[in-house]
Image 1 (tube, rainbow, N blue to C red):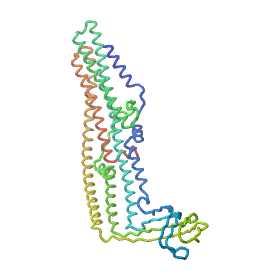
Image 2 (cartoon, rainbow, N blue to C red):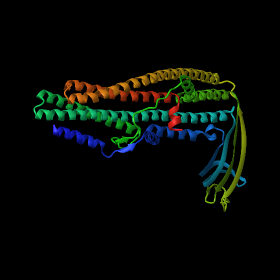
Image 3 (spheres, rainbow, N blue to C red):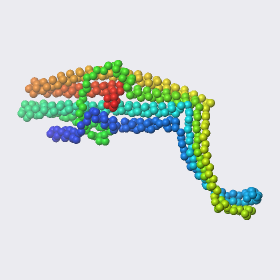
Image 4 (cartoon, rainbow, N blue to C red):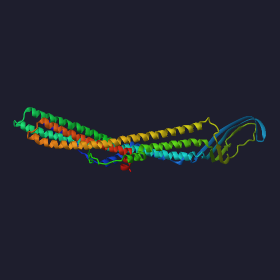
Length: 458
């Protein structure tokens, strides 16, 4: 028995060693900075910001620099060629070397394409806003998870405290009965009963410590903590302020600030812009293609070899060099007269997608309204349940204090006192659970009305 008591003490001391303090606000800030989902969405926002430019929308021209070389060695044979002012049948002219270099600049610019560039730029802005709103949804969900994860750890810690109180009381009772037994004032059955109660409460403490360790691990996962087994001293207690909500204010806030609704509103504006983008295909397009090319060509016959009837042929003393500069600017106006109704079908499909988006908006609004009504009713009921469980715990605590004195003076037996002891533990655990349930309902209401982002990540 002494070895078992020592094992529990060592285990509890081990899991409590080297703990740092952690408040709810600190946990939220750590999570917002390090949470994996938020970091991923932050990168997605950066991609959307990079794409939101006039160049991506097609408003700016394209400029290309080209350099082309032409190098050749030519061997020429002919049966009848006018060469040197006379007609000679049959000759060969070998090793004619030609070197050319043509750098140039080309500009391509779609001047007008039915305002497609302007519409595309507007769509890129909307995609960036949608990406930012997606990040806000992830932030809201993360804050909710961190708050609940933090309070679950607080709940498990306070449950452990209650089980520890039960264990301490059982230990005192066991020591008391052991002393009486040693003096001959208690029978063996009384001693075995208290020993069994003590062992049962010891097992409850160990199991609850395990539950607390798991709660810390889940919290560390939300905080992206490298040490998944890190333990904390949680400075925020499991309590909640008594606050009265008006349903009309909640539903108005939900329709205006709910992060999911704000996200789908942005998605709907993108669908509307897609329809305008398809309609732009009906207009003609005007494009400019211009540039400048410069050519330097060298025709080298200084090392050419001639075989033929013209014995007076002499190689030129220097290569022949020619230079040419060419400017060009051309406009192209195109208009699609008929393409098998592809443009009209694309426009009709975009309009159908827009109608589908409107239906989804209405569906989500109804879903949010239902969830809010459910959460509001749940909040009201849980407030009443908390009041009931608080009164029950107070009564059980008073009964426990009175019964302890009665047990010591022999007015009640061990069985009756154990029942009182268990009733108090059950009432204390249910009160803690009722507080957590009310916190959960409050956080749900804040999530549905956009309050989490406003309060914790303004």
